[in-house]
Length: 336
Image (cartoon, rainbow, N blue to C red; front, side):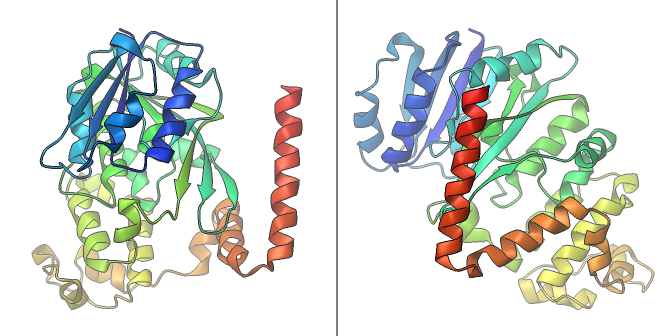
């Protein structure tokens, strides 16, 4: 078996139906499907009966529910393929050759254990669709030091990744917010080589109420706590990475942290090694995050400004933008 499609599921069968339909149309068929189901009912089991994957399908219902990300790990543990392709139940392949292109990423790059694609992201709240694709600078930073992920997830959701089963790593069950980039960091610390395609092969929703990340967003205890968990994995050299420091500055600005004791405001212990004024965090806390950090990366600045202003754009203009975007995509697809 070449590749295991690992689908951690929890209700939302309308999303899962689209996921499974996108898998059935793939022109690459040397795969198995593993569905690890956290649902408290038979909704997912009943949906699977509508599809004909035959012996390629393995289903496991978890009782009690494992939760995220342990349900992800459960699906991966059942995998028997050479490659692991996690596919969340609310994500799906965009095109019929997507799985083949994912497999080619690792086939064509035998020195890499990890590969990923660009993503088409659907904003559930606004209806906006955007392409998530790392810049050449972000790819260079990632190759130079996986800790650069601390400033932002340039890779994307787990569904846009593929890795060799020999990697044999699990997602950290202590995490919810940074669970994906923490996993990517640990994979790339073992083998820093990766394969990437700028083709968007997966579409994924964001700002959807059912997503675990949406329950974490803006919770200082979770965001800062998980940042510290990940930071504690870094080498001393990685802690001095300018992008790691920039990541902390962004967090300090978001959660209005000005002094070391502010960690306790979010239920976190004050880092003991930073008692002196010249410690790592006291020095950072004296360096407020400014617009100059964003000016170093103009494409990032433009995206942040656009998506901050978009919800306030009149609905008529937003509909026009969506229609124009749709026509561009249609023309692009018809010419390819």
